[in-house]
Length: 474
Ligand SMILES: [Zn+2]
Image (tube, rainbow, N blue to C red; front, side, top):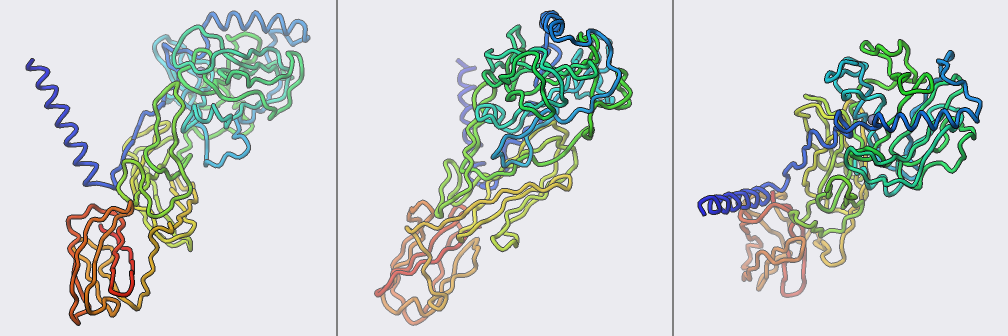
């Protein structure tokens, strides 16, 4: 009984603090998730099991026999690998991938190291895991990231039609393609989406950059990613690490035509959302709630009136590295700007801010610069016909704007006689109304100190007209 009572108090406290927090801080930062899906597979979740390697090698040897392969000979020449992924047509984000695990260079059980002597790997991993990010299942569902051949060769094995929304380690079969290059080396493309694998037949040739499938989560996989593995021969014991580096004991030279840096800190996506994006976790498709068009007055679900959610998705966030974030006016001047400093390292993470939208119609830009690279997203502000600012600047002035404690209204527009002053928020709610019989002072002061921050409209009903002017409460 006591415990239940304590639980109820705790829940009440949590609810109270959450409510107070969300009301008093409309510009709250949320979702600074430092380890968001940073591990796709791990030691207890290998991408390819020993049993699966055994079956694979048997299939490859059968296929290779009929395709006059070079057998188990070690390769002599060097194939230069291109990047094995590409964004599909129409993709508008600034990037789509992050490397979540390299080849494990330390053969001692229980200990691991990547080619750069770092820890972006897991024990016994023989390939490179490239995750797609952010919104991995949304990307998978809409075929946004394609697996392409890193080098030309012959398709020596493939499988398709297997379950592709796996979230854990098990013995489920993967959708995959395996290509043998002219030098006898082999590349494995693993975990692809069901129904997406190339329709070419085993034995047909594949050109570099040719479509092989869509990134998925088939086989032993805890989220959509490509497991890319290279062998110098026909068996998994000949695996190599395409990345050259101090701790690569498998091969001295890089297999890449152009090896990417160990980390690539950058903004993969900067975007504007009507409310929080919903990221339920594997295997549920995310709900982006993203929009590039906002009609003022705007009310986002759960947000303060006039506010939207601005997201920045990072790859290889680096402790102490600062992002410059800004909203630019149609002319390029700054509407709002702020900075964010990464508190730690993360393969992939995001930060979201609630910020006041502009209220003047036009095309604005939300952008973030991280590690010297800028990612931009344009969005439209439209004004609704329902509440249109119609105040002739000559009729009255409203100051200060933005206001914190009071607004002062003055000018000849406030005619002598009966005037009604109303404050309306962006969802049309009346938050203040007072009828004042003006004398000849042509000035009134209205307290706004108790209003939540946001955009408001001051409406003045004079005896002959209605005039409306907007202001911001800070
Ligand atoms: Zn892997």
